[in-house]
Image 1 (tube, rainbow, N blue to C red):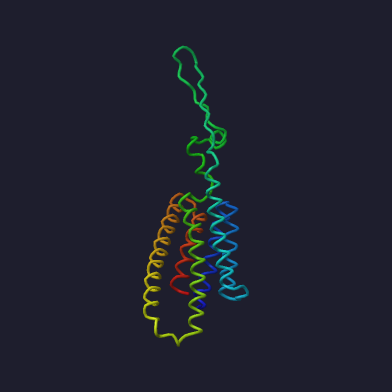
Image 2: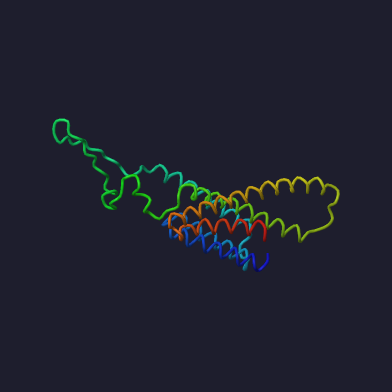
Length: 214
């Protein structure tokens, strides 16, 4: 792995951690911390085998997905319309929820002031962890094949063709995921949440660097 790729991987992990802290998501902070540890070890120290880090990234991604699914079941702030008749034929008054009263905004828009990742961005970031797990294994396989080159020429052509097709499909998927992450990051910037957008920027940079600069 080149020194430039190693530096970019660790820097992208730091961006993800900053964005996770800004979004006030505990699960995202834990996941980003694991990712930084994995990238720093893979790039510089190699104390832990790549397969272990791959499994850790996969587990972190699955846990993040479960957390998002569980969090989506939490009911939204309650709107309790109370009909108060001011007299015969009077207009009903709608009592807004406590959150809306505390923020001074409309009930449906009170959540937008909370600095959290949107649902699309959170799902895409969770998807990036299994992608990184595959990329770590792919990097380890490339290193192993480079160390054991030669010898097997009989069935190598057909096997190489199959792997090339799979690699092409996965590369297209990685690029598509990175583009979606960039779109979500731009959306966060448009909503004046630049620090939160760093999570998506970091994830996009991470998977692109690991795919093309490993």
